[in-house]
Length: 433
Image (cartoon, rainbow, N blue to C red; front, side, top):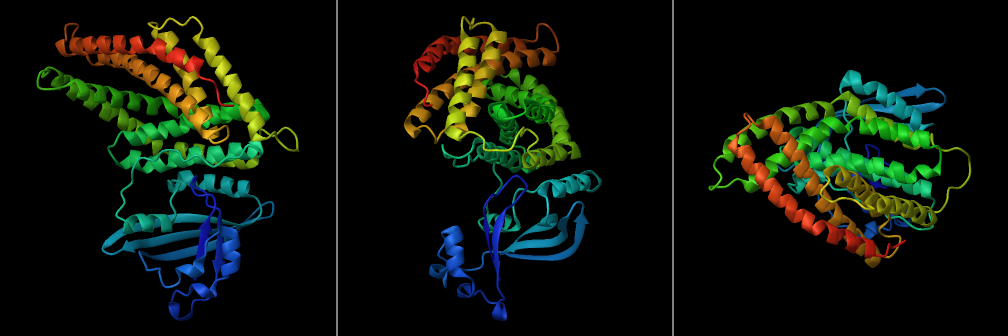
């Protein structure tokens, strides 16, 4: 009988505390576990649960395993598991390779894993068998995954916070990958892209901890995944805009919608080919290895505390945004786009630090940053929508395209009327750090 307690879920890695005891007559007997030790490590009182637990699911699989020695001094167990997870009449397949570090260096194991990805067409699985079993028992369907930020403390070292934030971002990417590859909900792609952008934002925020070149090299590898995903997202947004406008009084938009959906289907296939590729998986594994090997570290010793480093980094991002916004011409789409990037960088940098500087002040500040980003984001969607309309229009006098351009113009004027006021409200908001 085994009791496992997951300490760092997600990101394709699992760090678990684990206790094993013989199970007499194959029956669950919690009192045979080292209860005091478990309670100290996990704050869970298993003895109180005696008699209350019932089986929700079972796993039945064949495991083939071998141990591999990797230089220098690293030993791993490689397991191939094939079988089923069952909950009532519902089943889900198990077909996975699990690598377990027995001793030695995690980076060496990750490098070994990278060598398996392409020949075996492997993908990281962020959910354990148990998590999949509980979801199956609860009839939970996969839904788009938003980022779950770790709990951070002002007094902890900034380097530890960087690693925790990057793991959370990776978990968001991996949590939406399966849904994007197999489901039609466009939110999966949106959240996948947000996870990648947040990773790049975290790298930019924390690059003052060490060698900037190392931070920017990983950021560049992540950025290379974005263009095809971004194109597919642009077509998702245009189709959503057309659906919002289309109604019985605008029947001429039906043909335009058909053309837009056809183009969206093509771009989605291209984006899925990238997201399902070995290149994508190797980039994520490479990010995990980068976190472990810390190539940015220029000298041994303690990094600054998170409170001190966060105040400095967020202040720098806010000053850059203020400079970018000086004298901005709101009707100029290019200027708005540059400002939107600065707003987005500040928001993504602020979110992980939200618990450090007082919940009330931070929430108010973030709400006003988000309001500004929402307006700038929709204005950017309109600018992109106009460009995509030009690709779709079959003739200069296409009445449906002309109708949409008119709608875009009206919506743009409405948003521009609110933009300056939201900018001034944010500027007057005292930052929380």
